[in-house]
Length: 424
DNA sequence: ACACCTCACTA
DNA sequence: TAGTGG
DNA sequence: GTGT
Image 1: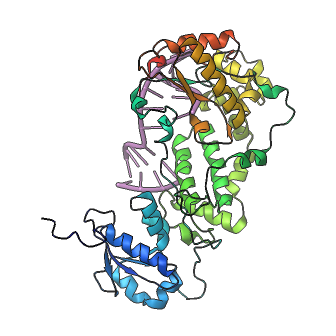
Image 2 (image 1 turned 135 degrees about the vertical axis):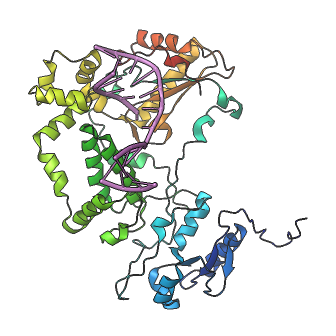
């Protein structure tokens, strides 16, 4: 059985590229790299053609120009083959699965002059976005992979209790130095051997505006529309080139007619009148502001606006506010302030220490944005576990009480009784 | 025309 | 049950 | 707003 096996690359019929019949435009490709690509393609199930036959399903090239130098445009159109950049190959190999082809399609612009140069800053390297990089680090700190299924109690210093105003920053004069924080971390390696990528962030002009629209629509309660922007932004961020024409985003997923129009306006005028209109609107401004208060959502914000309120101070005299909303107002600035990473680190150690006193062996670690390596965090997510898989029961209430006694915790934005039993 | 995420907690 | 949070 |  398995008669074929002595070939170096054990072509895998179930490889991610199986079924593909590939023709490569080798012009402008470093021979060494080309060799690797060929090997990988075959290894992962693709079939290589040395000529552009009609069996070919995919053609790869560095760019459209080089492609057209080798093959006739009309013939390509007739052939109905996928024309992709080698970047697709790179990214697919890195991800371990076929990437969406949308971002790598070589368009056969006419004329022959212009052309699109998919490389904004040279660097023939890959940049892809990993899908969800959640797994893995989870129990890295748990030391033993065996514990990964232990029951866990999840506490959120923001939604279970407020950890406001105990900050050591109250005394420190300045902490807001985006750059300083930025340089602090950025786990993104520049090494090309690594499988991490750099976010070029071209098209920031567009994503920034879309981000604002996202927030506005969310504040207004239009979650659907807001979600559309939420999906569109990362698609645009992924693009390896700077958008100069609406044609370049015509077929991208999540980018429909409306977004295209917006992009069109942004690349030509540098701004979006729709957004400017929103930002000028008294109602939108007010509702957005009120919505930033913890406990106030679109519905309440609108009611408050209709009652005639316009500033946060106006709200302080409002009778109808709930307990949570009052706290949200009282600690508005504190909650708004982001926590420097090193302070989170500090608190993690403190919490671990206190936890140990209550329940020896307990493991308290930080999750959320901290674990994801952010330079600053909006809140602090902590995860409490215990190796024996059962001692953690009943730990949370004691832990919380202890932290309140020592005034680490001062107020409850919400007090959860049942979620202390959450198991994963 | 219709779907697009979940779910515990608060009032 | 409507509203809210992430 | 986008996709089916």
